[in-house]
Amino acid sequence: MNGPRKRVYVKSFGCQMNVYDARRMADTLAPEGYSETAAAEDADLVILNTCHIRDKAAEKVYSELGRVRRLKEAAAADGRRVVVAVAGCVAQAEGEEIIRRQSAVDVVVGPQSYHRLPDLLRRAARNEKAVDTEFPVDDKFAHLAAPSTAAIRARGASAFVTVQEGCDKFCTFCVVPYTRGAELSRPVRAIVAEAEHLAASGVREVSLIGQNVNAYHGEGPDGRPWSLARLLTRIAEIGGIERLRYTTSHPCDMSDDLIAAHRELTALMPQLHLPVQSGSDRILTAMNRRHSRADYLDLVRRLRQARPDLALTSDFIVGFPGETAADFNATLDLIEEVGFCGAFSFKYSPRPGTPGAEMDCQIDEDTKSQRLSRLQAAIERQQAAFNARCLHRSFDVLFERPGRHPGQIVGRSPYLQPVQVMAPASLIGEIATVNIVEIGSNSLFGVLASPAPARARESDRLAAGA
Ligand code: 5AD
Ligand code: SF4
Image 1 (cartoon, rainbow, N blue to C red):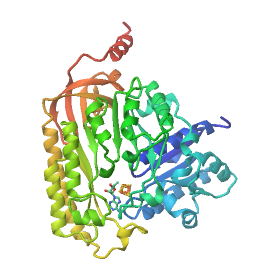
Image 2: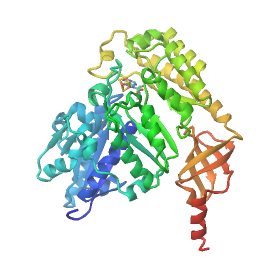
Image 3: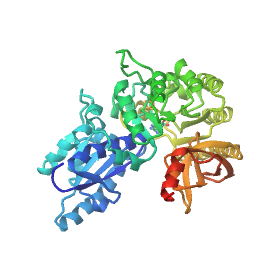
Image 4: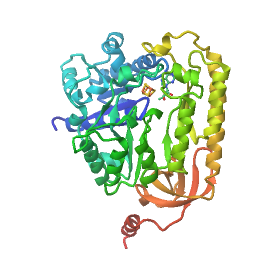
């Protein structure tokens, strides 16, 4: 490390991939002398990690950049230089245009080039404007620095690991295949090494993430492509990793071995995010989803056969071009037929350059809003019913952080529900069994069922000076 310590503030928008990327950017900047700060006004480097999936994403970035510009000018008045970087999918889509429109920006870096950040910042330090939105052939993951043990501990016992990026599906509403590029899977060896490093630093739960994670086909140690199921099975063998998840999946890539993994792998949590987008075959075809309503329902049946307690979440888009009242009702029917424990739902937002944006019969804003609130009401009812069924059950909870009230800590159930418990803070980072005694609107409340695990008891004893 050279020079005095500098502070980096990263603001992430959008999906879990961006959360993971923000962490890896911070890890890569740590050896350059940067530590993370949560206060933008203290920062020497501000990174906006942007999302392009919906809405007027670029416009939002420019208005955010207006605020960052004022920070930069205030710092300059104090004789301090602030470097401004735009990363993520808007950076990829807009490139140099960002600097043309907002001259306070020094660096524009696309998601495939984060390993080159130190170099781009050196150019910015020489007052050059630095833009890198290439899709380099070298593996960025091989060049991104690993997090320190201290950074892993600060981030908690549940960690993301990106296993694949990009998407080859070309759903007609989606920009991902354009901004994140073709599907690319990381090799098994690199993922296992990363998971082992996390486990050695106290991580208990690993979520494998990717835009189309179940299309994973990375090279195995045997030189052959491994499926996601095989990768999950291998990671489950790592000592300390007690919980596994993966997201986001496409129904068409839900292979038989992955379905079987839900039966066979006890570490694989009984909650799956499986976007369906619509319940109408006509709209599914127009969206180029490559499966029918019946295919999805059959898939859900097979998954529940493998894992009867599996809880499903999904993504829905309302108001895709041409969506009639009958199409929308088919989506509501599908929701009733499946029974979800939660979902994300969105109004269709035309993305420039995607086929959907060019389609006739765009739906007006009012109809979209009405359909969205009806759909969300249906999902909220299902979520409340699911939570209500959890009363008096007992779950293993992975505790993550202090709770809202003194003496309380909060963790996640196997179904990802937040669970608030009065329990010693030494249990944070541990799994303990909890009896659910009350259902709140956003979380469950419970009491510890089992004696605290041995490791936590030991630290209690030490803390008590025994
Ligand atoms: N408009 C609305 N929602 C979209 N999504 C992706 N693209 C669009 C769009 N153009 C939603 C899909 C996807 C989730 C990540 O975002 O539901 O599954
Ligand atoms: Fe976008 Fe997902 Fe469709 Fe890929 S599978 S194009 S990421 S919605």
